[in-house]
Image (cartoon, rainbow, N blue to C red; front, side, top):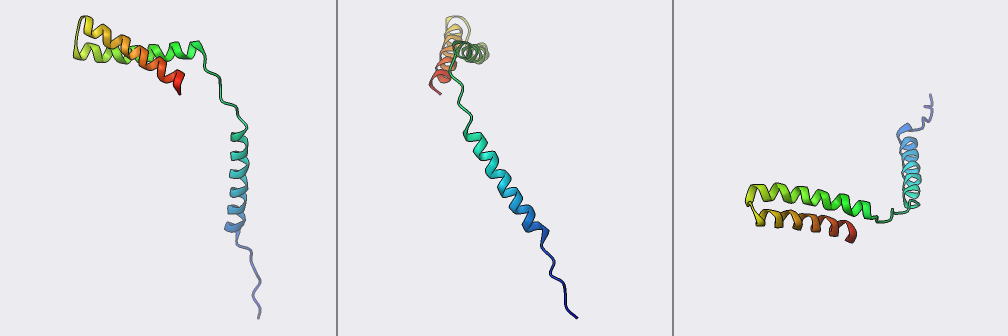
Length: 83
């Protein structure tokens, strides 16, 4: 009595998965990186200022607190523009 050869379906599935991942990777490389904008820098600066305000209120008040807010805005905007 002879046994029939049966193809292993997991190998076929892994082959299809490998092809799908290669296709996805090739599509991702074709996407251009968006340009930096003034609006993006403003939004990032506002986020940094908000973080600076939270730190400034917790740590210090008065001119030092305002300095922390301004520093946070500058760091947020610069990190966006330099990234």
